[in-house]
Image 1 (cartoon, rainbow, N blue to C red):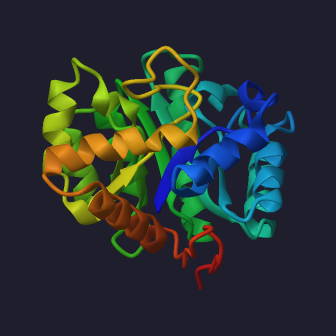
Image 2 (cartoon, rainbow, N blue to C red):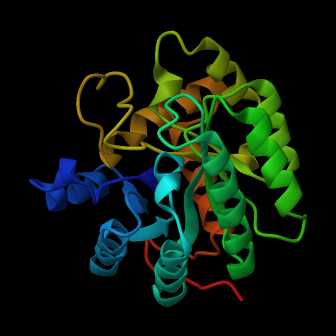
Amino acid sequence: MFVDSHAHIDGPEFDADREEVIQRALDAGVSAILNVGTGDPHSGALERAVELAERHKNIYTAIGTHPHDARLFDDKAEQRITGLLQEGPRCIAWGEIGLDFHYDNSPRDVQMEVFRRQVQLAKNLRLPVIVHTREAEDETVEILKSHLSGSDPPGVMHCFSGSQQLAQQALELGFLISFSGIVTFKNAHDLRAIAKQVPLHKLLIETDCPFLSPVPFRGKRNEPANLVEVARCLAELRGISLKEIARITTENFASLFNLSLGSSGDHYIRPN
């Protein structure tokens, strides 16, 4: 049993064959998927993600405002996201949120203010955060350190491709680190070195589909069934079996989000 801890299967890339994609994931042993809703918080994109999980007992939801869309976040967006997370029984995290200073689709000062605001809101709801950070490591860590304490739910550094220093700082904050198909890329030597050192109890796997297809699927649309290749790469790096990586990462996911996962990924338990 594998868990895809970060996917975007509610998007238009899957409109033609979404049900087949979900079935292929199940056939490949991917028994649970955390689908992350992103986009304009005023557009209905978040509701679309929530509704997908309500139709499938093996799918959970995270919603938040991505740093690309930070310029669109306002009081109305805050109320909308908060309401959906409070009302949705399969909504288990706030995210993805964070900073992206590579594309700068939103001004950096706006990104930082919206990130701070969403971390605090997630803390108020006792929900883990799913963090996106690119070329903004110091700023990301500073915001997390200033808003989260040891008693708060930790979160996930999603699609990790950062430095060894960022990995260590994230671990000190209690975060889990999730690796995507990037770890299978031929030139990802430094990332594989980090993946070998992350404590097993802090390890997650994801596809971030439809992006970042792992080897041998590079150049094609990614989907949750391909998660097995990420797991295979990590198993080889760590010198353990694929079955063991599946068990460890599934248990880590269930522990972080307070889930009891059956073979079909159901049995959600809401945190107290």
